[in-house]
Picture (cartoon, rainbow, N blue to C red):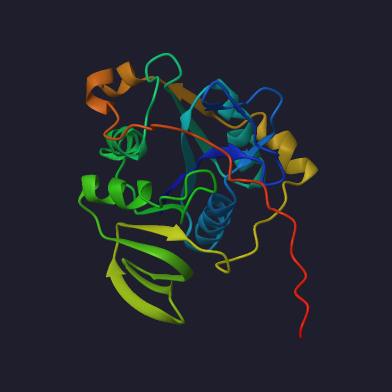
Length: 238
């Protein structure tokens, strides 16, 4: 099977966020693979191990994203691709990311594409469905179980208060919810092997895209931290 995983580099969940000049301050901050994307990577590896094939992890970001891609390779992915937009895109949004990913994937003949249900920094859950729409393939979100038999996928997805079982044909794009699996930690042999696995770097020009093609459709007006919690009040009963 030809399997692709959409991965995002996000702030560490333990990181204390600060704001400077109207932007999130990244100086000295720790970054990780978006936790929901870890479920997608793990599921991709498990599908490959049972069905055969190859797992390629793709990320849109900057040169610092290579570290998280190497982690995905250490987990067991076969290849990684970084689409570096640092010099081309100043302010992107979900449309920007999805447009770039879809343009990269359009001729890859993917059988299965996986991504995280949401990114913990933005939480929109838009990129996966947008990519599927642009590729013209079915998609199922918030999945907690995936079974593949030939060219058919049986998928269990999380819905409010219950679950839903869907059957669809390949190719399909799915987004992973907590409970799908337990992501593995990279082993020392895996880390050593990851150094020799292919990691390609592309730019917009390589995809025949320019800045106007991926211009953001939304604009961030302001970024601010939530107000500090006030001290609680003790109420005395009469």
